[in-house]
Each structure stands twice: as C-alpha cells, then as structure tokens.
Image (cartoon, rainbow, N blue to C red; front, side):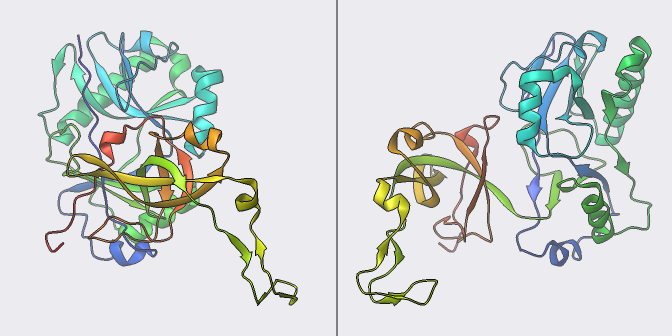
Length: 315
C-alpha cells in the first residue's frame, strides 16, 4: 500500500514587489517545464489513501474509488474557476465532491514507488492513470484533470506566461525540472513565481500591544483640528492584544515581530501556535523580520515546524 510522502515544495523566486525583474533573469527553456500555480489545497489521493499536505486524512469519496489500487497521485483540490484557498476550504467542508482535483504528479503506480524516476517519465505515468480514471467513471472527466504543462519549446518567456496566469486569475507559475526525481520536502527542483511575495509564519504569542494613538498629543487630526491631549486608538481603549509572529530558528520557535492583528485576549489566544500566511515586501537577512507584513489567512494545512528561517552567513 502507498505510504505518506511529504510533498515536494517550491522555492520562491519572486523576492521583490515587481516579479518582472526576477522573471527576466531566468532562461527556463534549458531543462524546465512550466505549470500554472493554483490556489487550492494540496492532496495526495489513492484508492484507499487521502492525505493533506501535512499528512492529515482528507478523503474525496467521489474520486478515490476510480483510482487504480496501489497508485498515489499528487495534486491540488480547487474550485472549477480561479479562487482563493479559503473559499476552497469552505467547499471542502460542505461539498468536497463538487470540487476539481488537478493532478500534477504521481508517486506510486500499482504499489511501486516511482519518485526516483525523472519528471517526464512520471508525467507519462500520470497521464495514463488519469485516462484510466476517466474510463472507469465518465462523470469524473470534469472533476479529475491534468495540470496544464507548457513545454520548453514554446516561444513565451516567463513574463509572457505570468501575464497569462494573471488573466486566468491564478497565483502565478511553477517551473519544474524535466530530468529531476520527486524529492519529498525538497525545494531543489521546483520554483515558483507569484504576483505578490507571501510567507508562512508561526503565531508565537498574543502579547503585542496595539497602536496606542490615533492622534498624538499636540498634533492635528484628519479634520485639521488640534488635539492637545491626543486621542487613543479604539483597540487600545478596548484592551485588545496583538498577535506576534516568528519562525523556527536554530531549532527553536523564536518570536520575531508583531503581525498587526488585534482582538480580545480570548480570541487572540486561540490563534497561538497556528501558521499564518502573510504578504511581505522583503525580509531582513539577519533577524528574519518582515517588511510591512500584511496578514492574509491562517493555514490549517501547514505545520509550524515548516516555518524555518536560516540566517545568512554574514549574520
């Protein structure tokens, strides 16, 4: 029977606000193929197996019976149209059979682990398996599909493909080495380009203080009126607390900074230990602190231990 394999991950290439600067540096035609990056939930699916990205049991009853026993697919659970993953999470809870499974890799075939094969050989095996699924159940032709692959021979460069991705409403682009095996947890053979740079952080505590002042003493408010005593912010007056974020640094969960999300102590305490996805505009290499972090969503499909920051050699 197939065993759980921690999915292969992507290295992020877009480290600046303008992804075009990074895209212009990559000649992806050498040994790469491109796929569009979807905003869904990662799933490993087999006839009797169904795992999330972190190994939680997440069955898809409509799909699994048609998968060949002993075969394990890697893919993304998505809505039919481009969407955000928090909407997918809602549908998973209420109508998982109405979602689309986009298969982009295959890890087991008839009980044999095939992750050591190069990508192009695994892709052929994957295409054959999806054809077999459709033959067994014609109703799944819209619910189980193959990821679109752009081969290296096309004339489009990364910037052109990113424009296509933007028109499609997806997150960006993933490049994969044709000759590379599937490496669990590794980021060495897949890279991603996204329109905005995002990062996963650990909610370390809820001891950050909200902004104290709306208007500081002696300054003008938004209407141009002088406020000699100033005005406190509403969260401050309400006694709210703020979430702090951090990473695993040198093997320990370490607080790095404030996330800017505030609420009642009871509500905020419930988020401690979770993983959050934030939009960032860069990161300091010595401390890991994020530039202008903006909270996007909590990620229940990711583990805190995956949020690792490694200081630069110069630090």
